[in-house]
Amino acid sequence: MKKTFAVLGMMCAGCSARVEKTLTGVEGVREVSVNLPGRTALIDFDEHVVTAEQLKEAVGKAGYDMVIEEDRNVEALERRSYEQLRRRVVLSWLFAAFCMAVSMKWLEVRPQSAANQTMLLIALCNLIYCGRQFYMTAWKQLTHWSANMDTLVALSTGISFLYSAFVTFWGDGYTYFDASIMIITFVLTGRLIEERAKNSTASAIRSLMGLQPKTARVIDPLLSPGGDTNVSDLGETEVPISALQKGDVIEVRVGEKIPVDGVVVSGEAHVDESAMTGESELVLKTTGDKVLSGTIVKDAVIRFKATQVGKDTVLSNMIRMVQEAQGSKAPVQRVVDKVALVFVPVVGGIALLTFLLWYFWGGDFSQAILSAVSVLVIACPCAMGLATPTALMVGLGKAAQKNILIKDATALELIHRVNAMVVDKTGTITEALSGQEGLRPHAREVISELKQMGIDIYMMSGDKEEKVSYWAREAGIDHWQSGVLPQDKENLVRRLQQEGRVVAMVGDGINDSQALAVADVSCAMGGGTDVAMDVAQLTLMGNDLRRLPEAIRLSKRTVGMIRQNLFWAFIYNIICIPLAAGALRGVCDFQITPMWAAALMAMSSVSVVLNSLRLKLT
Image 1: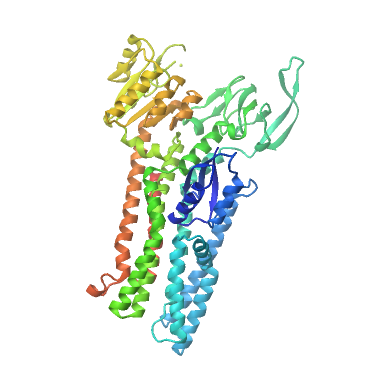
Image 2: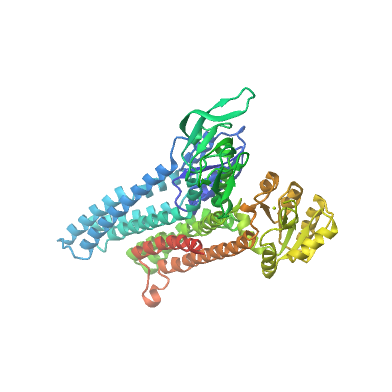
């Protein structure tokens, strides 16, 4: 089975890579994809071999918490964690202001030894209350022979504090209590801003979840002797939607949302289905018509019999699909994860080398400590880890808002590279509206737009040549083939791939499933068969062909954003680590101090998330 679990305690790319590696090593686990911004793990596992409890235990041993209990409210846990973080940030800034006032002589404390002892107490309070999570996490990581961003923060602040404490009581020189406080303050502030920004990346999921009401009005039906449901009622009961069962008769009044999928048994009303189909025109529903969860009754009271409840409704499937897509990994992210696993140990090695060079070559112990601490602080695996998944989460959420459901990140990353598209005729390019076949709305303009994008269109149909050629010309399609079987569609896709083309297949029926399965990108019409939608990576809700070029444009913007994020994340580390190590100190007396290093490190992560959020504005 494939299931998404919330994972608490992940702070950087090293954390997510560690969780993924741990779960992958558990027997019975087929595939794992950990999403750092979403704090989730998408796990494909054999429930007969390993249980969710065993997976939770494995994650717990790695130093993290996986939520498998139904009664644990993840949103409530995250809200509480956010409030605790906010309080720590406020208090840390107060400690920082107090310490800086003493350090800069704004608040004069004499003699200097008394000032140093005062700053020691302030820094100690800050470490214990505001920074203790860094040390607890670093210790857990150490017990598993691992390291993450918290390890770097714990090392840098710990070294700064201990060196300054030594100078205060036994040595002579400058102390770095203010640096140890500011490092924690900047890191915590960065995480607070980051958390606020990450909440925006998940807005698409919350919007979908908000479509579903919390309760439903169930009618107690009378059964006629023939067994048919008589919708006159004995009474009504308001129940949580989790208690609804197939066959329940539910009443929905004007302005209310339909709680589950079903079939109308009484009354008629216009229903707003725009959230599900993207079409703003109201749809009249009468006895025998299907209604969908999340749609809104506009002008009358209707009663319907529930046919799909719980996780089986169309809306629940949409939510699950978007969650799984946001939890999946694009190919480029897997490379970044491998880098993240070794990044922190490598940075630790660079910091040690920096200390040794400055100590033995420069002969300055204080400068050696300062440089090593700056290297530990400024190195940022978080930016690298967030570069791809934040952009993907926003992109996939944006697609869902446009009624384009994308199953995995690979499809979103790949569709902009498509240069050949195989399309089915009936149900895709054409439709039947009174027994007569006609082009789908906007079909011709969509085909024209796709051709302008450099995509060759091939229409395949089992229909007669005269019909296929006629509709191909009507739609503006240059390549077509009639009288084909499902195998012929698959053969065309494979032939185009062998020619080096990136091929998309668009279809709606069972006979398209073979070609959909082998295409580089597969797309199904939302009104098509369940088989086609199960196989396809993209589903166009509402059967609107205009969403095809929109998906391609969104893919281009998302991939462009990923490249920007990765470029700046890597360039940041490549440039800043040598500057923090003091590479220019001998040339122009310039070096990034620990406090500035902390500020730059925090802003690098925040900037990646904020840059990704620009996708929401397009």
